[in-house]
Amino acid sequence: MERQGNAPPDDVPVVLAREGPHGPVIHAANRCARLNGIQPGSRVVDMRAICPELQVQYADEAGDHAALDRLVLWARRFCPWTSRDGHDGLILDTTGADHLWGGEAAMLVEMETQLSLLGLTARLAVAPTWGAAWALARFGPVRAICGPDEAYFKLAPLPVTGLRLDGPTVLLLRRLGLKTIGAVMDVPRLSLTRRFVKADLQANPLLRLDQAMGKLAEPVSSVAAKPVIRAFARLAEPIFDPTPHLPELCEDLCAQLKHAGQGCRRLHLMVYKTDGDVSQIDVVTSAPTRDAGHLLGLFRDKVERINPGFGFDLITLMAGAVEEITDSQTQLGGGADDDLQLTQLVDRLSAKFGPRAVTRPVQRQSHLPERAEAQIAALAAAPAEVALLTRERPLRLFDHPEEVRVLYAVPEGPPAQFIWRRQTHRVARYAGPERIAPEWWKDRPGTRLRDYFKVEDQAGLRLWLYREGLHEDGRGGDPRWFVHGCFA
Image (cartoon, rainbow, N blue to C red; front, side, top):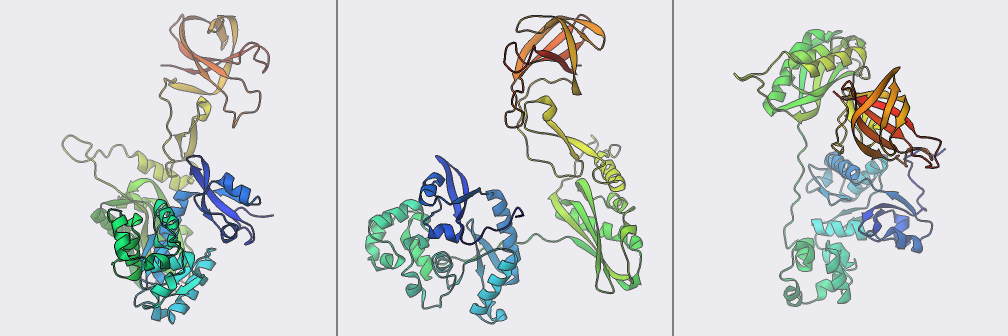
């Protein structure tokens, strides 16, 4: 059985699509799809006419950007200056680093090998400038090496798209008969200057050509890696219990976090054994913190899980999931109120009974009241914000709506009298209805709609009542009535 996430065969045309102004458009395509004439930016429906066997999957653009950012830091193994190049590439300044890998050709082979181990295919190029490397990597051979004096000959046969120009400019150049970079080079510079003198960088072929040929500087601005906050304890001789060293490690780590104005939501305790093995335990908090005493208490019942083996001589405590945190004043005279430590209570209970023992409610996107809320682990990350309609809801909502027996109902209105929990209620006043239709993408066919009413009986009890279904709606017999909650 094929597992989800397996790469498709190389001879199958596959594209990633994203939403466009007139339907899905091609976001990226594999080599087989490009050989079949599939171009990014084209409409999916048009490309299916060209290639009927085309397989389409929707792109996760946010996930791709996050993965590319991680790959930027991963590429630091080859050289110290790395950065993201658009939405589908990396740019590395390998000046002075290629000899460490046996030359440029050997370095490209090593890069391709390491990327293949990650399940990634790559088109690689080495060139004196960013622009030349960009063009060769995308429109040249699979592995291209361009010497300092070879840029003109290597770039000349490539399409004009290799100059990193926007779509309208590429279309204009093609209409002028300039389909290759070499054709643009052969045009007198004064003629192009008159036409593109006021154009910006992405619409000016002269500036892009100068960048590719090295006449205009384009340095690589490397992304700075986030500093790792950790505390060490190097021991003179092996020990079997890290507990005596934990208070000092927590104090040291929290001092570093406070100096950086940050807090952590995860701690990694690692002990390095004398036989070369590593043992690790983790603790998680529900909110960013740098309270050393609180973090120390979370390890109380977990240290015994460490297998010391023949002893360990190095202990590290590393902060993970680091976030910005600011000190808040909760008292008029200054300072904080230490009486209510709800997050610390949640952390201690979760550490003792397990992460799934303590839950918290979160909102979900649904109009049905029983589906608009879910329970997740208290230590789990908060889900994305959900935009919900601000309507009045009961203070108490029943887990399961309770059916009532109607004695007399007003047409298209609430019942005048009904029996609920063996008591007869007479409706004194009401508001509504508020109609909630079934969620067709979740509910079964034949599910009936609901009309909700806020009613108040003769004793002042306010209830949230709904009628399930309508007369002669073709989805069952007579409508049924339920109480779903109580107002304050």
